[in-house]
Image (cartoon, rainbow, N blue to C red; front, top):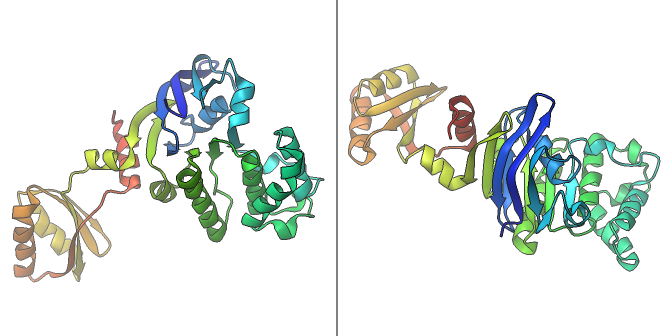
Length: 313
């Protein structure tokens, strides 16, 4: 059974369908990325999973607990970083006192609170700010504090809405390392909403791409990428006239597509084992200075744009 099971989940706001009959299953210990343009339904999905909203139809189960029948149990098993996380602290209370207060609400044993709060603040490099009022922290530090709060009760599932959006590169790297460690060492399941495609590509085992509340594509990231792109895309880096290189590529009947990118062209080649050498020879014979001829791996951005623009199923 999956750590997160979403079963025909639907949420309407009047005539607007924010989440449209979504069905997904996310295995335990998976880092899952939910992608889509603004207004696609990502944050609404997170609010439904965290019991902040009730679905119009369908339901979801987190750690075996139904969001409709067992909302308290769901909250006990999940840590949530909401989209508005910078506004969910008590601004007049210190960083330390905020976490102590939330630890008590989560039911953390009294004898464990001090050590747990200190450990999280030190990891997020906030210990030196423990006496500062939460409202006086920078946006990035408030985001770090929100992450500390989400982890206080050692949840088995984390629901993170844009977890690194307000962080500087060093802090963002620490958060990515934390997420990877939680999944690999502690088998925690992490559900991430994000616009940061390179970050999702580095971290996530599975992804789903949604638009207008509907799942367009879902699965293991490497399998999805290999499905959309065979091993036939190559980048040809040239020194000199890139346009000449593209003209030669387009003149070859085995070149399925070609596009120019600054100092190189990216081509899709039919039967590359046989035809790569032919294309390279044609360019060299024409006087093109080829610096590098290498396989071009499809990126998550390629996949995302292809799905959103093409409406792939």
